[in-house]
Structure formats: structure tokens, C-alpha cells
Image (tube, rainbow, N blue to C red; front, side, top):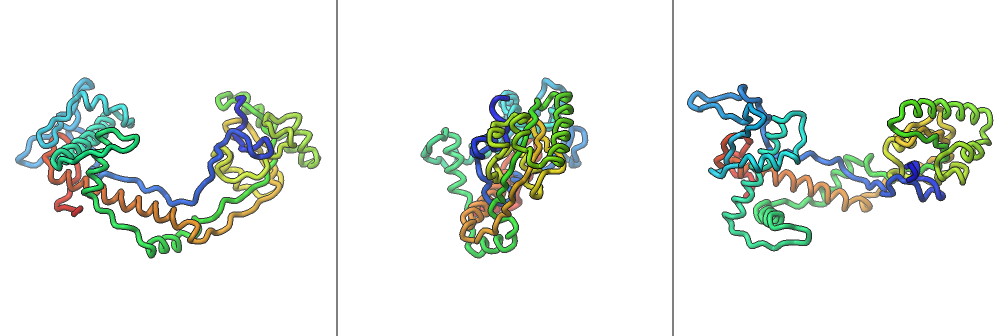
Length: 321
């Protein structure tokens, strides 16, 4: 554990092994669905009176579902290769997710061939990625988010747009491995003893840090300098930024051990003006609009295709003009 304590401190607050990335104001990520119905285990799927049962997942571990897209088969070899990219709770679910991905990929490739797109391969792209990008650029129409929509989101979510608070923090790290339960228990007891001593002798923090702390900040009396969000490991950050000023009543635990912490100063974040976050809002709203448009486009491809061996949700009428 020679890489540091992950607290963001040491070297006057500029070191540590936590991430140095700053947290930007942002919006919650939207989860993109591809409009696919929930998987029905074999033997329980509904069957129309004039249709034979559709076997989605074969019963044997060595067998694969029989799937085709407009008479083009999805081969067992392709399914086996794709399976590694879809971890799931069961093999059945993983196979379904892999099959769904391959069906969508085949639909896109067939549409690319139908249109005869001329490839313009960009930096870092392969031919398939370039073709898919050109297809979506041509066929997915995405309306622009206007200024009114951005202002509306800002007004409805002002609490999200604040500068990060700043903390001036000192700490004493009692280091122990994350998987050593005995050492962790011992370190916790030691941390609680140090807290008792600091309650009795508040001016002894620097001396105790120099003697007991495993963090390089011990040379500065345990001072981490000013810390903002994103500079510490997540589990420590969550606890630190909920603390009031003064000596923390209990030791804080992180993957690196137990921390005796004193918050010397706390500067709360300030509300950010619209101009400071307008680009972030516009980009993320636009991303959400694009995701919805792509979902609708995929549903349209599904609805117009002859897909056998797997149930996907299509569109009864074109959703993308």
C-alpha cells in the first residue's frame, strides 16, 4: 500500500492517491432501453392457436436458440462469441441478451447494405462503426434542444447546480488491508483511543499524526489542505462532506484503513448561474433526445423485419421519418 492513502492529501493537499478529477455539475444519466420485451422462460411463452411454440433458449447447455433475421441466421458461433459481453444472473438471460444484441446488429448491417452507404471512416473507427454512424446520421432525425428547454430544466433543478463545497481537513490514518478483518478491528480500536486522547488534549493532533499516521500528510501535522469533491476515494468522501466543523465524533473507515478526522473549515458551495452550466444542460438534454430517437428507429427496424426465434418489440408504424 505504498501508493498513498487515497485521501487526496499529503504534499500540502495536492497529492494523495485519490482521483484529481473535479466533479462537474450534471444531470442524472438516463438508462437507454432498446424496446425489448421481458424474456419469457422456455415452456411458458404464450402461443397463438395457429402457431407452433417458439423455442427461445434450448434446454441443453450445449445447444443454442435458432434465430434468424430476414432469413439470415444468427449462428451459434456468433452467439458464443457475443456471450462474453453480456454477464447476467443466469446463462439463459445472458444468451438472450447476446442474441438481442446480434439481432439489432444484423438489422443495422442489412439496412446499411440496402442503402449502399459510402463509408467515411473517422479516427478510431472500424468499417462497421463508421457505417453504423453514417446510417444513424442519415436516418435518425434529432430535434435540437432550444434555449427555452434548457432554461426550463435549469429552473426546475437549481439545487443540482452548485459549486463543490471545500473542506480544510486534518487526519490520522491507521492503515490496514481491506481484507484483513483482524487488523481492521485493531485499527478501529486504536482510532477510538486516539479520539479520546484528542478530546482531552486537542492541541496534540499534529504530534499524534506524526507518530501514528501512515499518510504522507503526517509531516504537515495531518493536514490535507483544501479538499473538494472528487479528490478522495468515494467511501471516504461521502463521510467527510457530511461532517460539521471540528473533531469527528467517530473514526471514518475507507479501503485504506481508519481515519481520525478534524474538519477545520467548511465552505459551502455556491449556486451557479445559468450561463455557467448552459452548455452542460444542452449537451445532456440533447443526448437524451438522441437516445430516444435511436430507440424509436430500432423499433421501426424491428417492426418491419422478419425476426424468428426471439421476441422483440417493434413499431406498428414508422416513428422516424
